[in-house]
Length: 365
Image 1 (cartoon, rainbow, N blue to C red):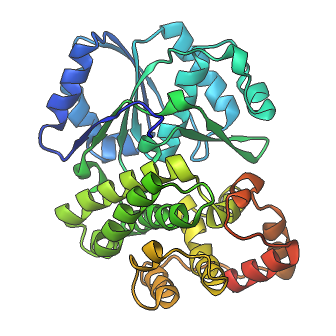
Image 2: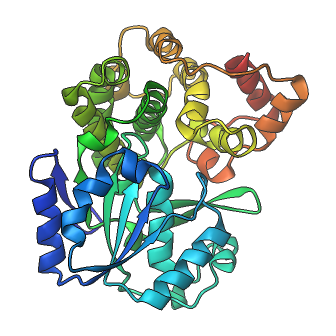
């Protein structure tokens, strides 16, 4: 049984502006808190696309956040949002824009301090049941944040995942034209993130029949359309990758991610690898470990080529998502020690620190 409210999703460039117009009018929206990336909003074409629907609306445009949103930036956004008292939060951008928009919408409806809330893991009695309405419009195809109830935030350099059912966006617009300006490297990074999410969702301890169905859809779409999206950027491949990212998001919204993601966060925060690149570094090695331990379901193996490990290694090499520098022995030890414990617990098999060090060494050398 799906425990999340139904989403209204529009797929495709055609009719997307009209879909947004209908949402704004049916909900009698007059004041909008707009959250976008600093550059992607205009470069993607989203700014020009949105302009007609902002006419006769009051809006505040918030862009003051990092690629890995910090809790201090959330607090700043919450202060501005409360001051405006909008009817709606409109998030347009990559995963960072989605994550901080979700957090701002949530904390704007309460007096809880965001830092205390994250450290304490939530305070049930202070939650508000009617959060700000949210529309999620991704300009990348990979994070799946438009389809999850999570918000990834950083506090004192540590990654936290805010998880609230009310963060699940009720409206989503997937307009593939917004990904046209993405360079091949970022198209590859976001696409590999979607693939890793989908694969991990099938072996996760938290997997269900529903999440497996979504993850399977995402894998099949990604395997067929990721390389064309990176190499040719065709319209069909871009829309199919947006669909893949969406279904991967729906999958991990239920199952959550596992070891590949657990190892990736430190790579992103400390070495500045884009999230999808960081995840890709570990995917083949983690997959091989799971294959040897015989914990992979037939439904996962049926989605992939006959030699899945070799295929994943080849794909990542083709997309140029291999390690960008040489890691020392001490760095490998540190990376292994920084594994995210929450995501690690969701992995189908456990690893000792020694085993993790060997895994990281294999993956990065």
